[in-house]
Image (cartoon, rainbow, N blue to C red; front, top):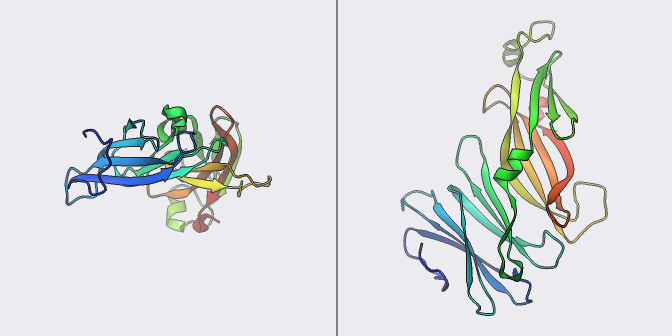
Length: 248
């Protein structure tokens, strides 16, 4: 994609750019953070060849980090997620698939050294759940890390849907399992808004994964995982299952 040490505010056709300003290197001087991508088809919103970069506010040069992502509607956000009073860069990119998944990367550029703090693929590989249908119109969502069980009542679902799974007594006709999909969204949370702890200026992440039943369109709810930085990595602060009104 060439050398982007000089940022073009009007990039040539076929390229896409987002810029943000803030101190991400920790020297107290605002830097220019940019997200670049190629647009192979000018008539399509599809983007590839993503690069996250920083142009130093002191003129010391440019850092570029290629991102292994393709997709749509990218966003770039700067905020302090680690509590060191230096900003980090959060990139989100919609994959565009029917499952509604995203690519997400959170990078630190402290002292001009790029460091990956969070990415969607690594998170999804660790955030694993079993989804098992039970008798009496219940679905258990089992957290494989903790063993905690969240139960969803699906008794209010459409009778036609239930009749394919249960007999008239509410017993399963056959074993049925669902799935918790990989990361579908990643929200920025300020001040511990979701849990009863004192507010904090340090930002946190809310990871959202969709729970599906027998097929992709059969959404049962969402697993919401609140993540905070512990000095070396993001750890779980809180895990909840949220259901749709149709399942309430």
